[in-house]
Image (cartoon, rainbow, N blue to C red):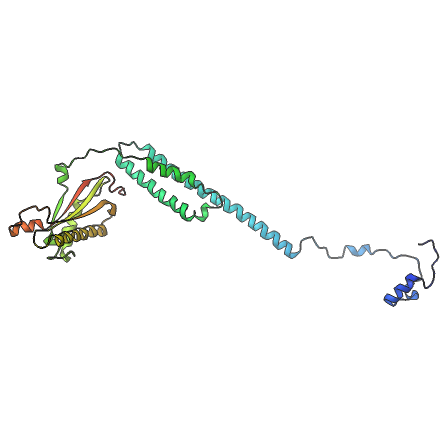
Length: 290
């Protein structure tokens, strides 16, 4: 207490001396004046902000992450908006086509089927990264597409096999295409097949039927298998050399069951050894043709 007189070798001084080795004479400065705080030096001291290098790096990374997240959300929103517009346009064009225009309707239906395949892939395997971040509409666009495909019923078409259809049937001589007993096309058969391909045009609602026939020589089962392999060989050649989809084709091996002439003469047997390509009306056939 300042008002009390100082006592030499008091308990406090004894404790300080024991701990620090300082005596009263050393500690006593001989003056009661207190030194002022060096305020002039404060302006020369280095100033430090509250941001350490680690804190500054964390704040920078947080800012970069925030900007990147906002940019990713904007890109995802744009991609999803484009997808919605694309699916919406396809649905609108499909419903805008009258049912009587079944060819145009079939084309628009094919577009919707492609959309359904894409959306089913997103449903099973997950959407693309650019469509993610919780913005992908998912079932909101997938179900209307599936409903449009499921509810579509093509109008009944009364198609009759008339002379015009018969004119679209092409008969090929097997001997000009295959060696005896073989189902592999000859090297010189290309010209015959090319001429045939010129006369065959894929159309929605029409099936390209490739049927193989043989004469009555040999075993009936072997003849049926040989006629089927020959029909498949012609079909495969047409697939490889044209842009006709596989859904437009059907093959048959009829063997000796439907002869076009008698099997009692060499000339008749030669006529029966044939491959016929014809267009057959079928409403669900060849829908991939644009």
